[in-house]
Length: 315
Length: 276
Image (cartoon, rainbow over all chains, first blue to last red; front, side, top):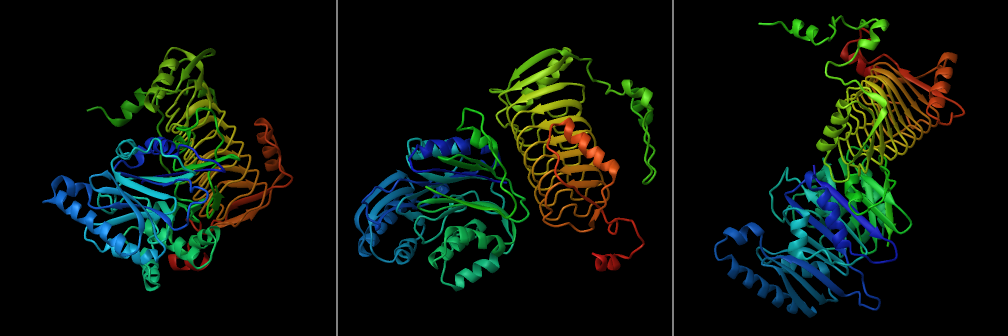
């Protein structure tokens, strides 16, 4: 059934890593197979638009346990990434090992992001989880507490975030199938989704004909690419999300985040849950109120968004 | 081997003779005082107990409610419910229960008899399959509010989500605010009172029962149609809302079943499709 959650602080930063860990831990019963977060760190004033942070996976967790000479392969893949970044003209490249198979890169780059992403993903076994000016997408097997400890998320400071706890139903228990999904190759756009899109293949083929590529067979990725495509064509996030209500069949509630915004959309049947807390400084959403309660010690007022409702909040 | 009938009679249960749509009278009104569950407890409303749910899980909270009732407590205050799921379920007893906070999903389900007041909001499927008693919620409620309700009064003073009263078979649902899509879907009996606006497909495929709406109706569902409000019904609405301190809307719209869909005619399936 999966659980989704999101939050945004208006005009300030907070320890969103810890807050999201707390919310997703409260949703553990909705899916303990894998957990993922799209965290948006603050973009420092004066920092250049061509400064990127990239989260990348060099192997599946399972491979590192049972794979044949996998440690050597990971080192080779890492070397190839460094070489290709340099070859593509990326500068100030810094790669930090977070786990045996997961790296965090920062670099400056002025070229076409799609070309860069395609070239890096051309390396066998390599998957880019996210590229953005502020987005850092972290996902792995296990629950939120495990993820938080492995990736040191408790102290992550930022402005907004979305997250997902996954109950694997239609694909494997691996990092590739974990959520959130980055809108490859659009910087800073990520989606988490609870539901099922029944016109997935038709919609995907239409986007593929427009030149988009997909890294998985998951319908959540379709939402991310659809939204990114609308924005790339000059649309606003609110408009893109409103058009998605008619464009997608099935039952769904999803959250989308961009570099400065958080959006929520619910299908016309309102078949998937979502609870909303909103005050003038802070917005939190989750599949269950118990997740929002996990970061509020006091009594709060919440509401259920209605069928076909789209809301967008800006940092 | 003892027959099923003997066992159920020993337990004090009444036999139901199934006879189509005929309405069954299960007991005489004079018997009402004796109509309690075999394992229900004698409670005193003046004996008050408190449960702090902050560090308890749902099972433990429900066990403690039962434990207090077994000791004769007729009034229980539940503190810090923290929007946990499945709290205050399966209470088949007379009881005044005050919940000082909000409930998660499936709160107050499968109850028969208690009067419950909830200071906060409730999540999805509140009071599902409720048989009798009252549940009053001060704030908002989630979807499938009062699903398969069979009796009693279920009141939300705020807004509720979609599919309110889906499959309800009796009782009264009162909504102080608005309600979402497909409210009253497949409703079979009972009354739903919505003081605010109602979402699309109101009363879709309803068999019977009545829906009263004080605001706008986005659209009627399949086989739902507007009826004429009687003086008797107007009086009923006034009394009910006054009872729960909810403001009376300026005008009412009444929605009933068109009775074209479910066994009300001799149409062939293909003809029914044409009607719909």
